[in-house]
Length: 200
Image (tube, rainbow, N blue to C red):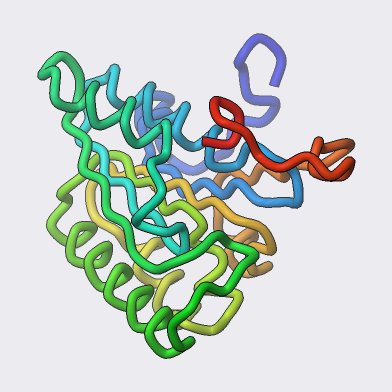
């Protein structure tokens, strides 16, 4: 994509403008750090455009105070850019199962997905961050067929970015943009725990 120009222009009957404004389904996956951070960076761009933003965090504890949440919520309240709505469901980090039954966590995920479906149908937001959404798919808590059908038939101009490790292959095949974050080295490899300002 030299100088921001596509290497191929498809013969799809669309104008350059129509193709350029087509809503995107994006996936940030892989074992490396930065999947959510990149998605929240995109949300900042959406905020700057004045787009309503809906953030749906799966499997991260509602008790955690995430830095991006505070920043985007404060920005969303300024009235200068787009409004920001933040939803949390579930407990625990992606790779740790917290207390509570699997059925409880699965029910939280299903409730969150039901809300996303309602919001997509109503075109509530222009930009959606489905953070750590790959995990409920991987664990079978959500029906992948339903998710793919809903996302590919969403109305209007709603952009969706999904984050998390181990994204299902069918999701990757469906997405317009897929970024895989690789890991070369991480401080945790040397026994260092996460720290303020870097992990949250």
